[in-house]
Amino acid sequence: MTDLEIEALLQKTMGLKVASIGKAALNRSIQRRMKALSIDDKAAYCKKLKSSNLELKELIEEVVIPETWFFRDPKTFQAMSQYLKTQWSPKHKNSFLKVLSVPCSTGEEPYSLTMSLLSSGWPAEKFAVHAVDISSRSIALAKKGLYSEHSFRDSDLAYRTLYFQKSPRYYTLNKNIRDKVHFHTGNILNRAFLCGLGQFDIIFFRNVLIYFDTHSRHQALVTLDQILANDGILFVGHAETNLFSNSPFIPAPFTQAYAFLKKSKLQLNAEARNSSPSEPAAKFAKNSYTLKCKQPT
Image (cartoon, rainbow, N blue to C red; front, side, top):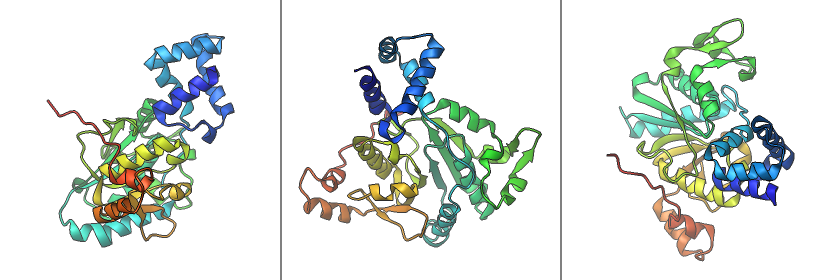
């Protein structure tokens, strides 16, 4: 039962569907932590894991594998610029734009968002980019802004010349770009997720749902519905679009961008009326999972 207990704990904490990464990968992570603690017996490690939030955090760090690069899926950034120009800006003249990248991994995505906005002529004082990841190690690396060749996989690298300084070992991101991103350690399955930051106009939530179990997907989608502005846009990974049926979102009209818009209250209410209480549409319409924010003191 030891393996199943560890899997259940990770599923409860971070929504991990173990099949999405494979039992072998999980076992390697467990073995690394057991070696670090000089524990030979997996049952003893399981006991340690259950009694120590710190060790649970360390195992999560081992399980999370950062895999990202700058301007991953370029059409997504093009779609974001098009949406802002044709739909958002006309309704929000002189408004402040709020962007969210979650999970942000080692920072390539939120920094790409910042560079994209600045390159499109968006005034630096008119937007903020927030970036969140469950891994404190990834956040620490992201804040340094040091990247190897591995982070640059696009054929068009003009932005690298413009925004990075080359050193023998790394490319160092310019400080003005780093300063535009606000990093947070957080878990979207936590009911206090980003409390106090309000809603966002653009959310990048890519390649996450494929790792979640069904219950965690539901929680994440309802949370995204709550933190996305009514006329905001949500970008996901290409393998995740089929997970949005019976959700509070509808596909946005962008090819190869994998974006969604929020359904209106009228749409959600109509779906709820036409579904039984046990069906997903009814659950979403009733907002069955809500964020619980503490009021500031």
